[in-house]
Image 1 (cartoon, rainbow, N blue to C red):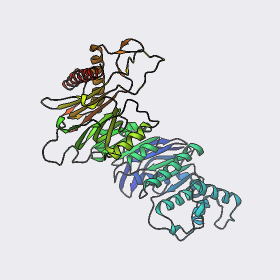
Image 2 (image 1 turned 90 degrees about the horizontal axis):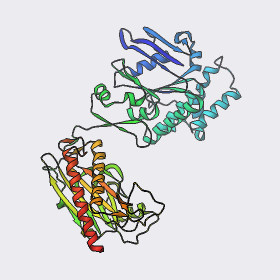
Image 3 (image 1 turned 120 degrees about the vertical axis):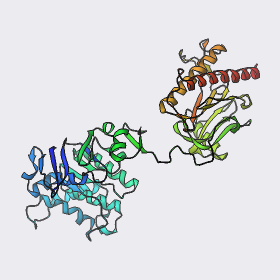
Image 4 (image 1 turned 90 degrees about the vertical axis):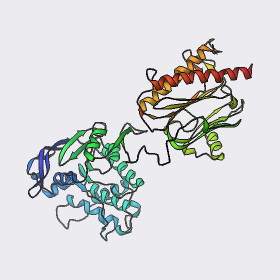
Amino acid sequence: MLKLEHVSGGYEEQPVIQDISFSVSRGEFFGILGPNGSGKTTLLKMISGLIPCTAGVIQVDNKDLFHFSQKELARKMAVLPQLTSHAFPYTVKETVALGRYAHHQGFFQTWTSEDENVLQTVMEQTTIAGFQHHSLQELSGGEQQRVFLAQALAQEPDILLLDEPTNHLDLAYQKDLLDLLKRSVHKQELTVVSIFHDVNLASLYCDRLLLMHDGRTRALDMPDGVLTESVINDVYQTEVSKHPHPAIAKPQMHLIPAEAGEWPGEGEVIIDSSMLNVTPEHITLTSPLPLRTLSSGVCGAGLGWNSFFVNRHVTTDYNCSDHKQEMGDYLVQHGFDLSRTVGMMTAVPLEDAAYRFQEKETFSLLTVVTAGVKNATDSARPSEQLLPTTNGTINIWLFVNGKLTEEAFIQAMMTATEAKAQALRELDIKDSRTDTIATGTSTDSMLIAATQHGETLPYAGTATELGQLIGKSVFTETKKAIRRYQARTA
């Protein structure tokens, strides 16, 4: 559809673009990235025919760009420039109708039914038909951008070129515009080539990306291949961290502020047992700084940043059709910020909790365990008979005063789970359904929380000092909590 081979060019004697080559297929959403001054807009102008190449070839459908007349090219290619504050005193419909000029033979050609059908179709697609008789100057920036997109689509092009189409638009308008373009790519096989300022938006919507630097190609690949920490750090000269999007398989880059990791308070914050508040109703810990967490709690599950930690006591006959909502309501009623809280629940008396604080040279660990084993189960031996889930669960909290990698978070949870299973084995806790040694209970929860300050702890497996400390403390405190539970229920 669109092909560039060793293209160079620019303004007068300045070769802004140097030896750029790539091709874009029909129905592809292709993004162009790069810092200010990297040549993105110049390249787009060369593709649209506004600036000639000084070297190389640009082809559309295997035909050199300079072989097209202006109207022929307009029927093949449309351009949506950056939104400006200037709006002509036309109605919306009149503005969109300008896009049909490429299909008219003469300047005064009569407006046809085909023109009107195309006009109404693109206005419906861009959701502007409802105000087609309004003045363009009455519209918001996002609405104006949709009007100009409709004008470009009215050309019925095969290729649509866009120069930062979401610039100055709020989040909702950005999403609406890009969703519309993506639908056009899929349904009408429209080929879209767009400059992006926001690398994360480009990653979400584009099939492939071209990253430019100093007028040259720095990277050309699918988003995961272009958006790497090392490349983005080098090209943009800023520190970023790469993470997957939570809903789709696309990478997202997060800026790292210069102050990241520096706690503004006086002295180092250490999470220890003095911060625990144990009452018959709940065990709580409030951290003076947000902690990076990995949790399987009722609330605050998954990866996140949290400051409040609650292990709530419920009655043995607790039964709720929506326990997440009920737990959330409970936390809010007791003054906890739900957006920053990990919440668990247990029917075990909380005064039987076992906890321990241990220090090493470069890190320290607080372990808190509440345990009941009425629901003990052997995960390796499934049974059709289901145990009641009203009483007996093992909740484990691990607070690390140190900086964990994501790998260390996962390994810490694995190490703790293995240590819990070993504690159950040593205490001869059995699954009543299978009469085999239990590996846990049917409602266990776990929390790993880290201050993310100090020396980086890259691993937490049993071959590491951190892993060994986690294993030993979980094993010891789980046994202690279970023995207290057994003594109470004997």
